[in-house]
Image 1 (cartoon, rainbow, N blue to C red):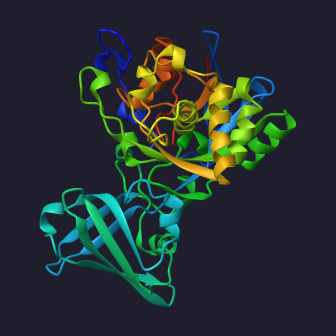
Image 2 (image 1 turned 90 degrees about the vertical axis):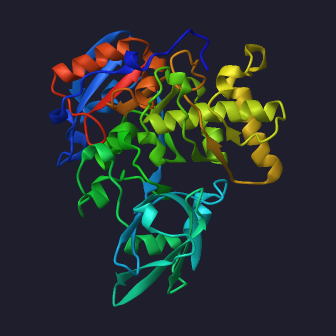
Length: 404
């Protein structure tokens, strides 16, 4: 991790009054406020005017993951309710898209509510209404110690994606402290979400509307979509006093050949839409480094690699992305799925991103560390300014454009 004496968690805290947490979205997605930070200057605008303030010829990178109804409820023979919160298909290198297309059965790792009451070897069930009929969904332990569950269902010709639309509930961030409503099924998705597999939304994208995309086109702002399936680990609090000791979660990212070609053509103009897009872009650089040097397990990136790779082993951004593209061309693949545990903290040197569009994040979170890595201590001034100007915070809150 960064070679400094300490990175104290206390340095990345701020006081967030409960009433500043946006528990519901605004009626209009693009009606939120927009804080703009550039060259040390802060200004306040409206999100609907975002295209007016983007640097000319910017290339935006969106995350098109789609939130799945990841909360499933089962009943024991005793009447006790067991909750399964889906995290990732098992094994975790299985492409999520493949798991979503499976029929009849599926194996998932999850968080288990009421776990102590669900005994090894015991089957729990749920009967779910489905149009004119019903689905019988069963769950048994596949690996008790690793919280891996075997799911099976009838009718077996339903895909897993179809099944959870009937059986599951949309998971909202725990800090909203409320149950999901029918309205959240739409409002907690970006309008461009197409790739099912996330258990949390890439919330920076919630502000975008067709009108915003039309305005981007008029301004000559180009963009592309990659896929990072956001995991529940994004909400995991940092508990270590030295934030470098935090164990970072991993998430699956999918890069397509088109992604790589577009990025190569726009290397000096990349702006990430959200922290997940930024994680995906920066991870791509290091995956390319591993391919350049023919390292083992090149499609897994741990949280320390970026800090341990010597400067003389760091190719240019173009060389790194080209290495990934060459891999796809050589293997005749259209895309590659990787797992990233990249941990962006102060001291990290950004390789691809020139800025970010993002909401305002929880105190002491890994997302605050990412913003501090991009902007230094100015993040504190930005957040103080947002609080002073009545900005709404967190997933359903207001937005910012932060340019390094």
